[in-house]
Image 1: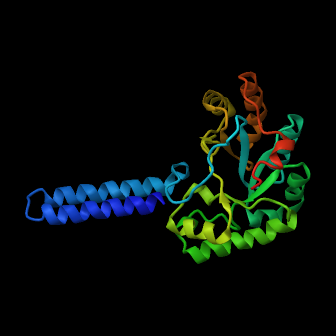
Image 2: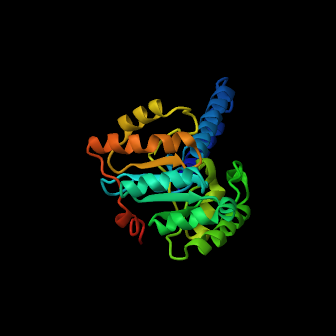
Length: 253
């Protein structure tokens, strides 16, 4: 919706510039600046899912609880450690699984569900350029992952998170066709960037707010090394995480 409104708005601006500035010496500089601003806005819309520019994603909870989410798994080692930490703290989490990895690590995927957590669709192959695929290709990729995920848990809400969080107009049409909900995040851990846990935890503790959806990856050692410290410190600040009981109905219609 935002993209359609924005495109219409800039179309009017271009028409105005052609009609009123066509004979002006400022025509081309103004036209170029307008075009660059449009490209910048679209680029931000592609890269920043939280802007909800192309896809109406859920980036924050309606409650005061904090939801932990994990992308790119399952991993036979890291996911296992994370499950142990979540169990110890009675925290329910949402795992966005890659279909291909579920086939390789079916036992750990089964354990995620058995431990009371939710699983969501993170595509079948996690192609980093999936956002630039056609609508049909995106739908095909997600449905292929759904076939795998449904073998793990048939009774699950239809939740989806795009690989690396990039979206385009094709995603809008794909999400509508799949009748799924796109889940984003408000707080990103940047565990793909931090090499050690100390700085990552310090930043996360300072930035965690009530209602946050937090993005981690259950494929990285720094994540499993940091998780318990992060949980303890934010709980000391009065933050309450979604419990294993609450996660079951969190995304019920």
